[in-house]
Structure formats: structure tokens, C-alpha cells
Length: 135
Image 1 (cartoon, rainbow, N blue to C red):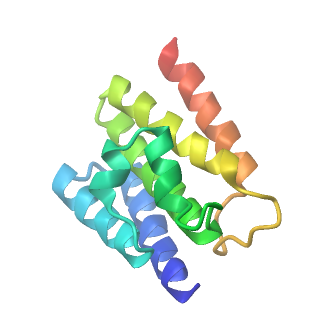
Image 2 (cartoon, one colour):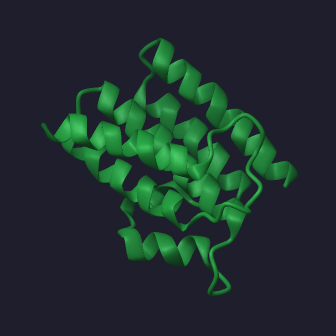
């Protein structure tokens, strides 16, 4: 749980930076990779995987692990946000869809790092972005 809290701090800071100012792809990738690694995830695999592949990354035992699922979803959300800001709409849509699929796996009883929205709030946020980007 401590590592997930650390990853959450990295992601919170990164999202704030992304929303405040342009950030280079390399700098973003470094921060996202660091956050993913804290939870035993690989950023490149998250980026390359389809939804089924994501499931296998967060459900090593056959059931979705709360910490890994949240971290993968939040990491992809930050990546999608930056990709959208860069103007790469098609890639942003693809990443948002993957993030939403992971947020939908999350159970209301799962404990999330402090200061982050609940999964259903994230899904609603992503659905709004997808609607906006698709029109």
C-alpha cells in the first residue's frame, strides 16, 4: 500500500503539471514509468496492451488486484490527458478507453489512495472527454 501511495503522489504531481504547462513526452514517460514500476507494472506493456491484455496485467491471480488495477487505470488516464493536450486525439481516445475499462473493474469497497476521485467519477470524467473528442 505504501508503494501505491508513492505512485499516487507521482501521478498527482504529474497530472497537475500536465494541466498547468506543456510537458515533454520524455519527461511524462519517465514519471509514468516510475509510477507504474512502483506497483509492479510496465508502462510500455500498459501502452501496448489491448483491454484483454490489461486484464492479465492487473489480475495475476485471476481476480483484479485493487492496487494494480487503480494504478494502471490512473497511469493510463494521465497518459491520455497529456496525449489529448498534445493534440493527438485518436491516440488519446484509445488510451481513455483503456483507462475507463480498468476503472470499471474497480469495486466500491476498494480503498483508493487519498485525494483521488472514486472510480465511478473517473469513468464519468472519461466518458465526457470521449464524447467531446468524438464530436
